[in-house]
Length: 333
Image (cartoon, rainbow, N blue to C red; front, side, top):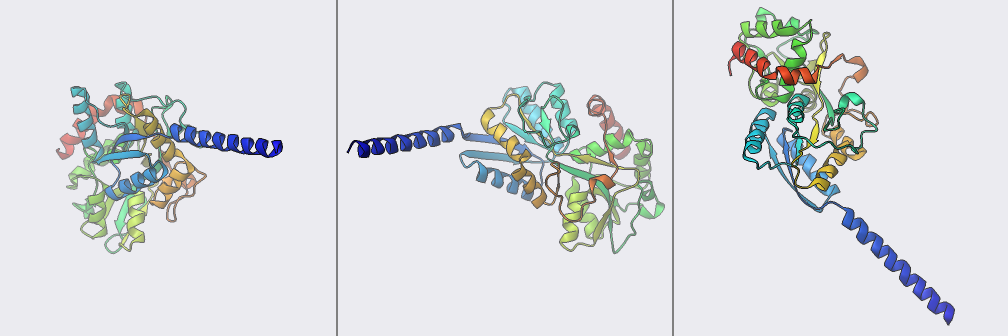
């Protein structure tokens, strides 16, 4: 009888401990509202938010999507009013986030899970973290143009008005390319001056430029590789070349605002994007992950075969206003 009572009590205690452990784990799970500003394409952003919500069902995500420059304009207006809305930023390039870091607007997430990332893919002070590798390359319409292996080979009179490219005044990837190019002797400002002489009018983001080349309206484009590969897989007459001078690349970094309203949820968002699960999502979305444990989708050249050009981000931040002004003088706003 005593043994039966002892067994029952032990079983009850074990059940209570299990329940307590489950409650403790539930209490540790982040909850509440998380506000995200992102420059991801709308359908990609929706996939990202849906996957995160599936992993963290107790977090309610509100997200806003626009071009990186437009998001930065909105954010700076909010900063001036003292009412910063986003907890997290997920944008194209490190230059805009570098500027926010310089203004001491970003939270340093010292415990971020970066063990599987190369140091070049995240800020050394851990204020922002790359989530993928997106290279800007030469796109060409396979029915109207032949592949060329050099940026400078585009500068041909036959291509007058026939090169589609996003504007660095709108696109973070295009801005990063501009800063990278002018710091690369084989490209430099001369590349942009000759584009202007050919009547090229950079505008908008990568989406419109991609459509212009895929439709045959333009022969060539200066577009991100992931967008081209996705369009090619969908049957568009488009292909890409990684030029011999090298390519700029952005890592679509994620950052937590220093004014964050829900820090546990914000950290969970960063953790998710950098996790193996999050990196597999990146690959499933048709992008090259920053975590080399996760393979890139079919169609991407191996990183070892690409000449990746990396600018001095701090210099780019310092020179950005001047560089934008010089670009505007060449092409207009």
